[in-house]
Length: 409
Length: 177
Image 1: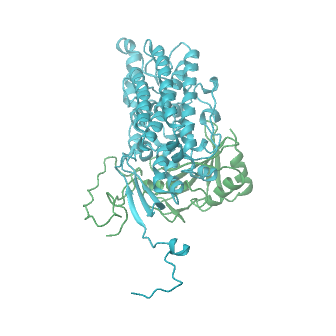
Image 2 (image 1 turned 90 degrees about the vertical axis):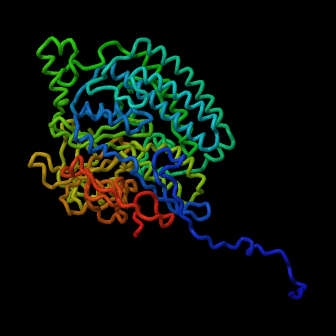
Image 3 (image 1 turned 180 degrees about the horizontal axis):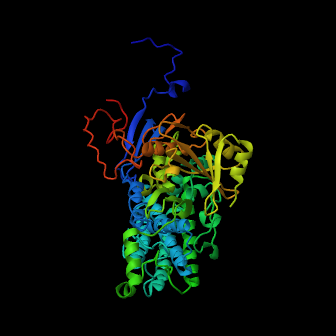
């Protein structure tokens, strides 16, 4: 036993207590099949303790050759593939694609079709935002918020099913307008559903926005600077959370957006909380837009009257030679799109959904590039997480709302 | 349609611009030399305010009319100036085996875009530094969006490798055997 020195002090000094432990970096796989990665993304994370040192998202598990399929089918037959891009909000994809093709042809669609497209797209924007908010609550431990949000989304899904005949894979609309008009009494039903959705949204909002546990995990986490956000190509709520006022609906109005009175909410911190709360505010704007669109909804046809592009009515097909020829040519050869190229963008739920379409005049897309908003945003995820805690990754991953279908094409 | 971006490129970097044209919708396009694209990108981003990276892709022109087939690939760049509300549409034309200079150092968003173009068209980017496949798996042979890649082209399954350590995820991820 060592002799006791009279100067011996048994309490360790500060430098000893704070001595840096030599930890070894650990590599963790998150995904590709993990409850918190809604899509199938694999995040290879290098950890120092609980801090993320390096992160490398690996995608492609849901790749199904979207572009290759498009290049080998007619312009109209691309439509079902677009359902599967952002499968939470398929109407925005359907209409986005159709509008790009119409712009390439140089086609003006009837007013009524424009308004119905606004209604459909805004309904699905609400559905997408509700899913984001609900899943976000769920993954931070608030199961009831998820249930309220999904109940509201279910109402939209039901209305969409009445409109298009499908709950998720809508394939609604055709080049030149819409394949069918609104069902009878549908507007009343939607307006009633909107009231219920608003109530449920308020419930969700109250459960989350002023919840201390929730806000503590959201504020100041997953921050990205405005420069980086622009640099990575963030669009939609993720970019507007940084206060950049860029919304395709305002920047280059399409359909009937220039006729509607709405605002683009902006954040200023670029953190998870702003991205979350912007979505809540955007839902309110979308509700307002749908109500306005129903008020302004003009009567008239929903499809252009041009048999080179629109299918002729069935009675004409069965009784006239012109009808038979037009029908045959449309089904066998597809819509004639003149040679040319275009980049056209619409605002999807997650940001700018852009299409670079190229036609060689053969009746099939020569090139069909889709600029999925989630692709660019996911590429910036590593920047948002490196140097931060592992636990912050989950809310960050939720608020960027990566959808596997569009990112992995 | 505003042609501010192309006017400025023509004025400040005339040697970079190969061709400019307006398509039938009135949108302006600029064709840039493959080795000049980083300079053009830097000019657009730092001096002209085109700070929002929109997208990148490529076109394989193999099946276009003969006069448009040469060079074979067309790499597309879309950059946006939010304040001016203008989209710059740029193209770089290269043949197989030629290199395009990478703009990853200018726009971080081009990282995945260039990996995507490499994955699906086999166009290489000089100075990218981390040019891996984006969506397809490492063992995939060929480039799927080339026009001469068959629609129903099938490749054999990758033999399952023994589970060695945590670095190996499902499929292959570049860890050497």
